[in-house]
Length: 415
Image 1 (tube, rainbow, N blue to C red):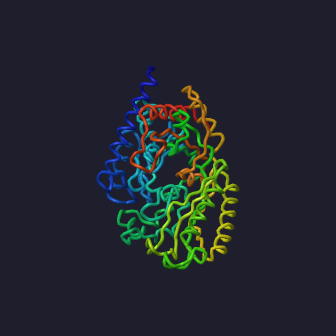
Image 2: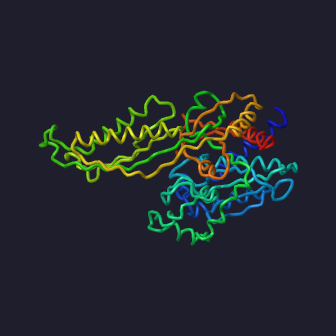
């Protein structure tokens, strides 16, 4: 093992230990749940700030609660290459989703700081305070603040306790009037590069530790309500039923058929409820979600159009009323080819085959694309690619390889 490889193995071990330590900051003992501006979230922010300081960075927090570490350039106040990810989590989530993209660059900067290495540009690592949207049902809050696209309307969203985002932020010392100051000036940013676990099985199945994201898929989401007619399960003939649940099930199968066989297109019914349902009652109402995603917006929107048209036909044929309310629409975000090329050189320098793949999940890079070119480095995860789950895993060896590739990328970065 060369001295360089040993250095990156040290970084890999450091990343894995920090991941374990950060996971201790949770709202629920025995599982990782860390939502926006809870005590566990504040504790995690303080821990990240401490590690950033130890790595030689100047640390600040903005009015969205983002934790930002700046590793100054050779010449002060130079534009920055920005990296980072989020440190909030889903309920009962994994240790590496988001966190890896913060801890890995801190570990790399710690190595550079130890030998006094600086660059012609600054490096800024952002721990985005909120990405998942769990507490206030609004996503990408941290990165939207940094990009200057924060939707002030979501400040009135309520959590499960009936508290508004606005009052929770104020109680934490973060005031909405200061959110505009969190935005980066585009001329101060060279690019944004996010390191993230893949959250899928492609790299694992192909036995590859790293991959380069080509685009982050756009997504269309709907909540659908179907009104039929409740009736006795034993007395209403099949041909006379106005079964809301079966209409919803048929729509779900329609989505599955429409999205099957088209590369990069996926469709999901993730929630399905029959309010006040009973085993001996024909369902009179059904409520469910639809999520359709693709890396190509034209492909996604064509699928949405087809599904909505088929829903109308199903409603007419089954004599039920279907109402679809769109709850989310995000366009796909391509990753900049010039950044992909530099990531490819970084991966190839470690004699690893270069694999390009889209991201079906949303990431903070989507928001940062409003002000700069973006790129993403995917790192293999195990257990079949499972994520958003306590069984989410990765290895020290892969963390070391990702550290090595990221270090090469930064050391050879050219705008």
